[in-house]
Image 1 (cartoon, helix red, strand yellow):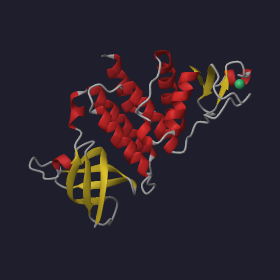
Image 2: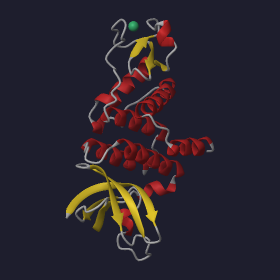
Image 3: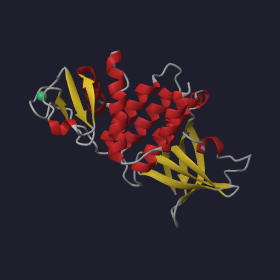
Image 4: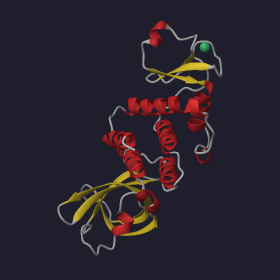
Amino acid sequence: MLTVKGVVLTQRMIGEQDRFIDILTAEYGVIEVLVKGAGKISSKTGSGTQLFAYSEFCLHDKKKGARMLSSVSPIQIFYGMRSSVTAVALASYFSQVITFAVLPRSGIPEILRLMLNCLHFLCQKDTDEAMLKAIFELRIAALLGFMPDVVMCRACGTYLPETLYFLIEDGYFVCKDCQSTEEALRPSVEMPAGTLQAIRHIVLSDLEKIFSFRLREHCRQPLFDFAEQFLGYHVDRQFQTLEFYRMIKGGT
Ligand SMILES: [Zn+2]
């Protein structure tokens, strides 16, 4: 028997009664669990295994394929999120990124903390969702080993250029005046100094601090563009949950 705490990222029905859930844990990364009888109305496991629930799971030892759920007790159910379609869409996007990129047994405890923090903020009414999305994208990229080089202009060593180009694929930046003709042909995001400072804050600060900083209006969009493109390129995948989020965001 294994007891483990984790967040339910995805669920798939198997027939009428059973389903598989993917759980993000601190110690074991993402693990797949079979929940027997989940489809029954009186299911005791209901709230603890629902999407985005943070629960303590007791799992039978692995025989073939997935582990089977023995019992579960919810620790936190993020109810507040249900009132916002965009919040649920973002949580689904975060889940899909993690499910895709975090292998079983590659436990990175901070990924669970990042997800729990994001779920907490998605339950708050006044959360800046576009900002939260960018923070998640950059931090998870860094945690997965795709760390942008935020030190200085690759060409001249300037720490904080007034305007710069951050190259998506190469993950470094150059001042506007230092950009070579060859670099100008590669995908990059033009940004002001304030956006660079925000990127540094998000990838380098302690996790508790990354959700609180002020950013001037003209610095926001370049941050959003860079975060989404940088993560998408480096995990090398199109996420349909991101498409869905964009679609409903555009419609509101
Ligand atoms: Zn330079």
